[in-house]
Structure formats: C-alpha cells, structure tokens
Length: 564
Image (cartoon, rainbow, N blue to C red; front, side, top):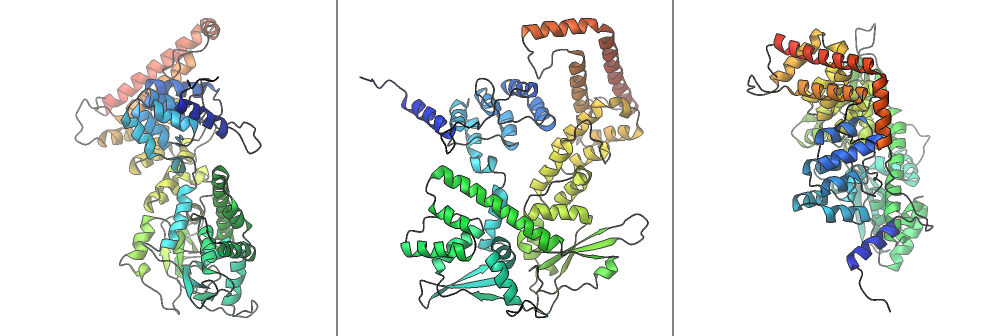
C-alpha cells in the first residue's frame, strides 16, 4: 500500500519538468544547456554576490548564454533571485533572461525569490516578452487592424454572411495581403490593371468583393491569421468547412493546421512558426517591392521632379528620401523609397501622420505620393526600413553607429538596443570603423549605458595608446562636465570605469584573484602558482605598467584641475 507522503506541489513541478524536457517523440531535449565555460561560472558567482557591474560586463563583452544552467541546474536568474539581488535580477531580465511561469525553471525561480519585490519583478516579465523576440513585431502587425491611432488601410474586402444578402466589410492593407497571400497578390494586380495585366496604366482599387461562397466569418479567421492575430475556436461546423476551403483558395495551408491543432504546446510552436513565416514573407516582399523599386537620382533638385502616383505597384502611400555625398561629387546622391505608413512603426511617424502636419493630410486621387526627407544615408535608411518591416536584417558594424543615431532620431528604442549590441560585441580583433571617442559620446547623447561601458573597457585595454592623446583629455573633461553642480571631490564616471576595467585587465594577466571568479580546483591553483613563480619578471613589468598608467591618469586629472 502506498501512503500519500509526497508533496503534491513538488510532485507536480517534477512531472512538469519531465514533460517540458521531452520532444514530440518522447526524447529529452535540452531547454537550458549546461554552461561549462569559465565566463559562465564567473557570471554565476557575480549573480550570487550581487555584483551588477560584473554581470553587465560579462553580458556585454563575453557573450555568455544567460539562460544556461550550472552543474546544480540553476540558471543565473534563479541564483540572483534566490540571493535577493534585485538590481541583478532586473539586469538579467532586461537582457533576455527567461522566467516562464509554465515551466519548472520559471516556477522554481518564482518560488525561491527571496522577497516579494523580486517576485513581483519576475511576474512582470512573462514568457512572451523574454522568450519570443519577435513578439513586439508581431503585435505591431496585428495592431494595423485596430486602425488606431493611424488608419493606413487602402482597400475594403467585402464578404457575405453565410450566403445571405448581408455582408461584412474588412478594411485592410494591400501590401500586407499581397505579401501574405499569393492569391491576393494576383487578384490585386489584376484588378489594378482592369483585369488585363498587359494593359498600360493602372487604376486605384478601393474595393474588392469576394465570391458569394466565401463566408465572412471564415474570412475573418483568415484575416486574423494574415495579421498575426489570435486564431480562436470557430465553433460551428459550416464555418470550419468554409475555412478549410478558404485555406486552399488563399494558398495558406498553415491556417488550417493552426485551426485544427488542439494541443497547447504544439499550438504555441505553430504560432511561433507562423510568425517566422510571416516575417520571411514580409521581408521578401519588402526587398522586391520597396528596395527594388527605389528611385535613384543625381541630386535633390532632380528628386523634386520625381512623381510616383498613388496607384503604384508597391501599393506605397509615402516616399522616404535619403541623401549621401560620394567622393568627388559636389551634389549629394538622392534615393527615394516607396514605403507604407502602416509599417513605419514609430512614435515619430505616428505623430507626423496624425498631427497637424502636411504629411498627415488626405491626398486627392490625382496627387502624387508625398516625400519625407530623412537625415541619414541611403545605406542606413535601408537598415532602418528593414528593421521596421521585418526586423530580419543584420546591422553591419560599419553602419551601426549611424544607424543608432537614426534610431534615436526616429524614436526606435529596440533598434537602438540592437545597434548598441552590435557595437559592444566587437571583439579585440575587430577594427572599429569609427572613433572610440565617438562611441562614448554617442552613449552619452543617446543614453545608452552599454556603449559607455564598452568605450571605457576598449580604452582601458589599450590605455597606452590613448593616455597622451589630447582628445582623450577632452573626453575626460566632458565626462566631468556631465555631472550637474559637480563638487571638487565628485568622481568622474568615465575615469571610474576606465580604472575598473584597467584593474580587470591586469588581474587577468598576472593571475591575481579576480573578483568575478572564485578560482578553480586546488590542482589548478598549484599549477597557476608554479607558472607565476617562473615568470616573476613578466609580472613585475605588468605591475609596473599598471602603476604607471594609473599615475598618468592622476597626472591627467591634475592637469585638468580635476579631483576624482
């Protein structure tokens, strides 16, 4: 006879753990890989101690997987929450640490949180924000249906209700229908050519009527799917039959698979696959109908003569203009991009199109598309547009700084974060295509602390090259001036950061105890001591170099009449 001595909640957690670690074939999968690198061990130790600066450094510069686990199956987030370090927990969550309530690790992290303040913080970061990086993009596409605060729809699809005389109107976007459905791409193209694709001239199509056999309720399901909304249980059999026919008619078999899936875990995976497929569809459409349709002219004066009508093949409703002066040219090369207001997902453009600006007024049918100049180069604007349309393009290091400035101008915080990550992930072997001083100043101007830290570490690792540079002295003076009502004894943030990373640089070189690392096995420590004894001269030189650099920093501050 079995007695009921087990803890029900603990048993449930264990069963949940086993379930989530199995794939569809019943095999175990590794959701949280074991972190075996020295950097990951340093991260775990820093999380236990609550060392915010060390955690930030390891995340920014060492590319550590913050969702890996140690040999006791603890991820860094759980260690920090267990030890009660609120700031470290917040930092980890902001950098993508996962706390998913429906998983064993997530439940354990919440259960072991030292206090309610940390527990409440963990609850604010549900899995959709941390686990699915495409969720904000998908939400932006779904929000187009709400038409608030900006109504950018340009076509009305009419579908009848169950074969009756009653009908429903769906106000939608031609470019999105064309990108998500080959059927609509052909239908809209044919309609704008009056049914004859070879006929010269186009007409503006405002309404499209579907066949009477298409039920409005079934089409509503297809619309939600194309706009990445939630596809719910349809309930009625006749609607289900119509949806099945419609998925074939619109050439979207994934819709029927989503409707028929009842398993929660598999449905979530299909949802992820659907978003990724939509991202690929829109990215491909963007390259074919936006980038490939750009208009290049020799000067801004020539650009003023360009006229793109509203009935264009890209279904664009506005033009963005970028300029760049090439070597040997007196006039800037000018490029015009046919884009869509609905995909310009930023408060900057929303305010422009909904406020009392000329760009927001409604056009007459005979008017050409309005032109909006953007103060950046064509190469950078293409990166910005790629991010806005699909978030799929990579940011090259050579354009990352300019792209970050453009993101700041256009109020695109997530693009700013992406650009700052590209810059701060540059390795020691990467030659920066811009001045490190500009990186630090950009961090100040755009309020990106990661760039400030990266710049300080980059300079500290090469301080011999910079310490006597007059521009470095100017940078230190600027850092001091950034402190409002600075007192004589106040610290200077840039100098503090450089001293910190300089200390790390030499500790790692001469084998002193690193505050980020508790040390290895006894045998390893003995080997290290033996190696140190054999290289006393080298270590003495390193110590002398470190002291010399610190003295030069003090001399620089004295020359600038700064006490820090």
